[in-house]
Image (tube, rainbow, N blue to C red; front, side, top):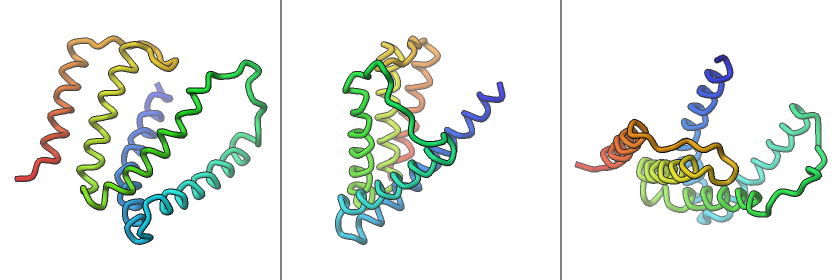
Length: 149
């Protein structure tokens, strides 16, 4: 149960960080006049932090697994780049709230598909009536949160 609480708090902190990151990266992209350059700077900072974490917490480099992973697992980096570039470019023009709200809606849609079918090695969690109602309410909430007027 302690892990559940820790993981929940960590993911809440992560969720809090997404709009903060969108605001910071959007402003950085606008000030540099280049979302791609801003994203490159952000990735450099992220690389340095990841390498520091690798050595400080995990003790350094680990060997690659003996059984190779399918190539598509490495496409996660493409999604990270797509997210950072998109939010850096769109958020200053579309608004941080709008950008993050629609990202959330996209996350809900992909979460349902991944859970329902156990895609990409994730455990399967069927869509129950309770989950479906929750997803509908969250989706309506996204639209209400971005609606002006």
